[in-house]
Length: 332
Image (cartoon, rainbow, N blue to C red; front, side, top):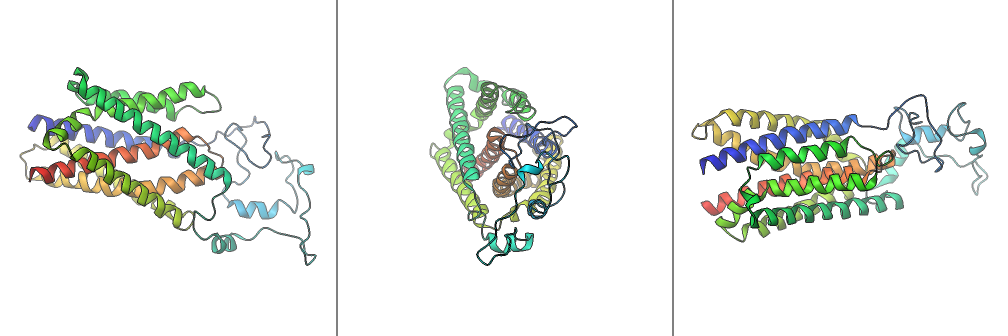
C-alpha cells in the first residue's frame, strides 16, 4: 500500500508538471506572424494558415470593425474593392457597428451570442472529446485484463507526453489530419493505460466506485459547461491568472510531496492540498476552457483537437480525484 501511494503521488506530480507546461505552451502557440502571407478565401475570416498579423492587433474586434467601413487601410489583405459603403437604415442614416460597451450590454449570456460556426465547432470538439474518453476507457479495460496492468503507471504516463507534444506543436493546416488524429488517439489511449493500476485498486475496494466517479465527473463537467455558457461572454477568461497561480501551487505541493515520507506529519496536508485543490482548480478550468475555446475560434483558431485535449485533461484529472475521494470514504 505504501509503495502504491508513493507511485500514485509521483504520477500525480509528473502529470501536474506536464499539464502546467501544456497550458503554458498553449498560451504561446498562436497564429504565426511574418512578412509572407496569402489572403484568405473566406474574406473577413482569417485563419491560422495565414502568416499576416491579425488586423485586430491589440484592439477589440468591434473597435476595428467600426473603423473599417470608413476607409480601408492601405496594404491590408482586405482590398479597397472589398469595403462597401454601409447601407442606409430605414431612417436614412448609415448603419454603423455598435460600440464595444453597447455590444457588452446587448450580448447577454455567452449562449445567446453563439454563432452557427461556433456551435458547429463546439459539436466537433465534444464529439472528439467523447471519442477520446472512449479510447481511454478501452485502453484501461485492456490493460486491466492483460499483464499491461502490472506496468508502472509512470511508463505510459511519460509515453503520453510524446503524442501530446506532437499534437500541440503541429497544425491542421500544415500536417496530415490523419496523423494528428492518431496522435490524439495515442495520447488518450496511453492516458487510459496509466490509470489502469488506480482503477484496479478502486475495483478491489468497491466495484461501484468507478461508475460513481464517472457519473460525478460527468455531472461536474456538464454543470461547469452550462455555467460558462450562461455567464457573460468572456467573464470566465478572467480566471486565467488565478488558475495559473493555483497550478503553480499544486506543482509546488506535488514536488514537495515527492520528498516527504508518507509517515511524515506534512504528507497528509500536502496530499489534501493536491487532492482538493486540484479538484477545485480543474473544475473551474472547464468553464475557463469552454469560453476560451469560443474566443479562440472567433479569433481564427479552429483546431478542434487542441480544444478537445484541454477538456480531456480536465475530465481526467477530476475523475482521478473523485475516484480517490470515494476510495478514501470507502476505507473509512
